Length: 478
Image (spheres, rainbow, N blue to C red):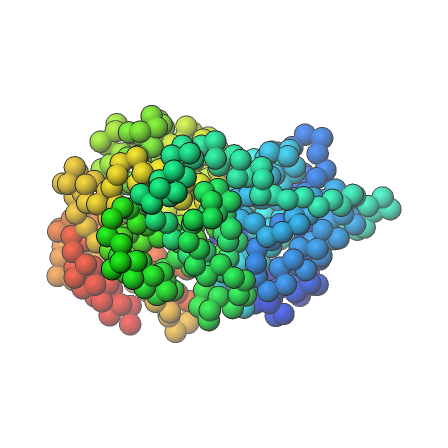
């Protein structure tokens, strides 16, 4: 197998690499036609279609890489609908399903730093293809796809209108617009220089206050990931607003680089991850919209999720970490909502895909219809369930893959019986090692599959206990 083909590996959601090093025009020209061929051959392909959607985000040269994908895919006989502008990744997943295409090839590196770009492969059903499909793409890279004497057609399209119209139909859009126009709700949207830019103004009007909406391929020197360390500007803006306007509801919504992950900031400038938003969404969609179905959560999700689900007599299905496992479940079961702790949330009534703009609309609808600030809503759910907790996560770099192997072997051969002075009462191994402790807290130890990184997750009654447990885990690893 040629070295260039052998070096291309798909991760949990696509192939990513550093621009000009791992991610190049040469490698993309090899991958894209093979991906199109595999999409054509998969069992869920749109019958009779030979159309591939090609889209992109706002990263460095993303539109140029997208044009290269369109050219190489059409050269091997497939018709191409090439986006005329950047858009959220879920907009291209929606287009694949709505336009009866074979699937979508999206140029994006999601939440990675600006030096990265990548390719996501979406199926005709409107979500990420499963691992067996990306493995088949990898296996066929050495063969390639020869050009045809009758290349496919190329056309441009705007993915935004159909996508936003679909989202508008899913919420009481008029009620949200009226709340913003009347001053009852002040909405800040930190789009992190990414593909969500312009999305909420399109849906809700020009009174949406966007932050970091200009294109910046270096993302201000950080990464377009909805984490507190990248949100100093949003925190400052909300605090300043609160000093001058104490009336009405205030919320900040945060979107990652390709708009498939979400977080929020309440009126007190507290960061709210999807560990907080998912319980609120479960309650709102069940209580006010009458939705039914299963709740799908990853093993790293908060214990508040099943407690709120129980309030509404909803069943809960738990998966390994990674939205692909949630999407698989959405294709085979009646699902109300599926979500992961890193911000990806999807809905059974939509497509089996994380969609941050739809989540944003549901969050806003919950605020407007309940009259509660997000922080107040979260505290209300804690009171209802009798459950109060704090959560944090640490990604710990390891010295090498050998260190990773030694730690993993230690967990397998010397099971932990005590953590931070607390007895271990149970251990789940769905994905990594999740230890439930005597004080009703839990610690999850999980290794990256591709790099020497240890991921540590903890939920405990107080933030102090969370930090104590994580400090213990870091010490154990070192």
